[in-house]
Image (cartoon, rainbow, N blue to C red; front, side, top):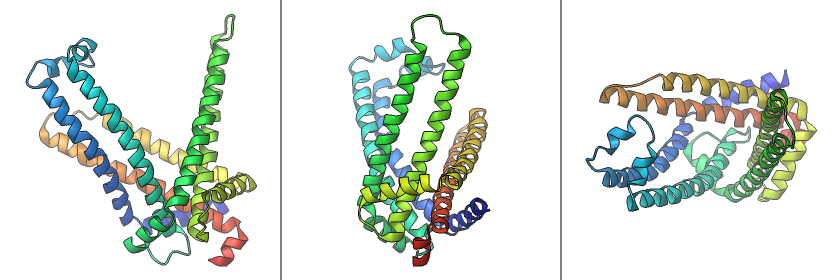
Length: 293
C-alpha cells in the first residue's frame, strides 16, 4: 500500500510540475542542436554534391569513408570533441536541472514555478554534482566488474556449453539491472534529502542514500522496479513504432520529428514521476523528515 500511495503521490506531484518538463526538454534540444548543426555543415562540406550520399543510402560503406581522407579525420575529430562536450555539458546541466526538480517535488516546496526551480537548482547544484559523480563512478566500476567476470567465464579453457554461456549472459543482465536500480535509488534518495534538508554535503547525501536504500530495501526496490519496467515498456513500444515509420516526404519527416520530441517529453515526465515517487516514499519512511514537512 505504501508503494502504491507513493506512486500515486509522485504522479500527482510530477503532473503539477509538468510545465517545467518543457524547460528540461528545451535544454536537451538546444544541447543537441549545438552539436548537430556544426556537424551537418562539416558533412556537407565533405560530401558536397558527390555520389557518396547515394552509396551511403544503403548503409555504412567503409570504402567511402576512408576515401574522404583529411575530411574523414576532421569529421572524427569534431565528433570526438563534440561527444565530450555533450557529455560534460549534459553532466553539469543534469545536476542543475535535477536539483531544481527535486526541490519542487518535495512536500516542503513553496510552489511549482520557475523561480523556485532556479533557486533550488542553483542552491543545491554542487551537492548534486558530487552525488552524480560518485554514483556514476560506482555504477561504471560495478558494471565493468560484472562484464569482466562474465567474459572471464566465457574465456575459461575448455569447451563451455551454450547453456552455460546463456546462463552467464542472463545473470549478467539480471545483476546489472539490480545494480542500476539500487544506484538509481541511492542517487534519488540523496538528491531528495538534499532538497528537503538543504544540506550542502554531497558525501553525506550519498551516505544517506545508501542508508535509506538498504534500510528500506523492500519497498524502495519494488517501487523502483515498477517505474523502470513501465519506462522500459514505453521505450520499447515507441522504438517499435518509430523503427517502422519511414516517411517519404518532407511533411512526413517533420511529423516524425514532432512525434519523436513528444515521446522525449513523455520519457522526461516519466523520469520526473520516478523522482517524485522516491521523494514521497522517503517522506513516508523517515519520521524525522516527515516532522519537518
